[in-house]
Amino acid sequence: MIKIKSLLIAAIISFNGFSQNDFTFEFFNSIDDKENILFSPTSIKTAFAMAYEGTDGTTQQEFEKVFGFKQNNDQFLEELKQLKEVAQISNSLWIQKDFEVLASFVKQLKSNFDSKPYRTDFKNNPFNSAKKINDWIESSTNGMIKEMLKADNVTNLKLAIVNAIYFKQNWKNKFDKEATKKAEFSNANGTTTQVD
Image: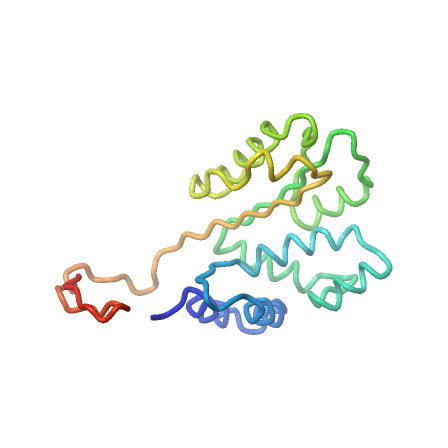
């Protein structure tokens, strides 16, 4: 049985030369291999790249060590630009209404990640805050992901960085439906089933 993770790695290899490959393989190897997990290395790294824009000192050095970031992240930003040619990548910043964030941080995220900042009240209205973020995610994924968060997930937040990637492309070589036929499939428990 092919694991989803194995399929994902095959897909990642096609982006040969991208700086996120090292991070992707390290992250992949740290996951419990007893589960089938689908993850987007680009989403994970983009969210951390956005957080990196607000770091300095030891925290900045740790981000650079783990993710390979540099104070000038032009290479990663160029990779995102290339990926945007085949996928819809959306970023947003959700800030607790009375929490102060440096204007330079918000400006940098808007410039580098096209990230719009939103004010919300996680503390006093977590249900509405979760709903607003879920609505944003649903819109950014063309309705594919409808409910990512619940009120309990956001109650103690001061800031949330949210990234969504929507990928839908045609196959280079389309599958011929006429080639479908019934055949025997071996199940994990040793039984067989007739399937298309």
